[in-house]
Each structure stands twice: as structure tokens, then as C-alpha cells.
Length: 215
Image (tube, rainbow, N blue to C red; front, top):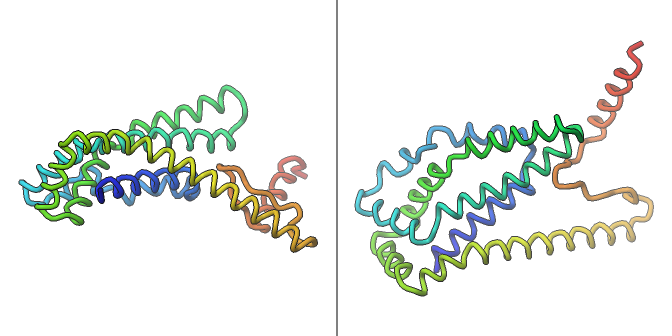
């Protein structure tokens, strides 16, 4: 069961990063952090070959690769929504976003991420524990757990998103009531919008004015 929880945590973490994580600049910087271990060779090179083989079998039983693929697809849709808010609302803008998302899907190394899970399991489980998990997931109950986990994960994600949205909305309304002179115009930014400091807003406004009136 610990293996199921571990996969659920990975799934939820990927989802939350996709919808609430940093700016696109941070997303662009992510491949630099991941490079060097992209193929998984650095992570699994020191693992006992027999244990590595068992871990690979376990990951196949629990559908880890499909889980990573699903996470990537859901993240792609979130990135699409965020990008659409920042480009012109026309065919060229749509084409640009499609190009970015298609490029992201091509560059996302599902096999590399899956390989990294081998190192995660090697770190947290002994040889005997891996063999025990293989026995469990080879059973009818284990197969059902593996099949239902992605569905359960998505329902957990929906519950977290709804609860988070309600909590922050209620907190904002309460703060407005308790502070009638402050923050009355405060609004929750959309998924792809991030708060800009006042100086950044002023600079953007000045630049816009200069573009409209060069003289």
C-alpha cells in the first residue's frame, strides 16, 4: 500500500505544479535541472541489477508509465490554458500555443521520468520489500489497486482543487469584511495570471504610454 501512496503523491505533486507552480520562466528552467539524468542512467547505475529488474517489473504492474503519461497530458492542457491568456485572441495566437504545447509533449521524456522512479523505489524499499510488493501487485487485488489508483488520484485532485478554491475565496471575503478600507478591489488572479508588484505595473503602464505617444 505504501507504493500506491507514493505514486499518488507523485501524481498529485505533478498536477499541483502544473496548475499552481511558478511562472513560465521557471518552467523553461526546469529542463536544465533535469538534464544529466534524463535517461535515468545516472540514477539507476549503482542499483543491484537483480533489484533493478524487480523494480522495473513492479513499475509495470502498477502502471507507472501510464501514470506519468497521464500527468504530462493534464499538465499540457493547463499550460495551454495559461498560454492562451497571454497571446492575441486570434488564429496566430492559437497556432503559437499549439506549437508550444506540441513541442512540450515531444520533449517530455516519459521513459526518462519513469526510469527515475527506479531510483526512488530503490531508495525507499529493500530487496525483500520489492519482492513483497511484486507478489501483492501480481494478485487480483493488487491489479485492481493499480487500475483504480489513477481514477482515485484524479478524484483527490478535484477535491483538493475545489476545497482550495472555496477556502481562499472565503478567506478573501472575510478579509474584505474585516478591513473595509483595504483590499476591496482585490481579486483572485486566474490560473495563468500572476501578481505584479506595483513598480512593475507602473513600468508596464509607462511603456504602454510611450508606445502610444512616442513623442
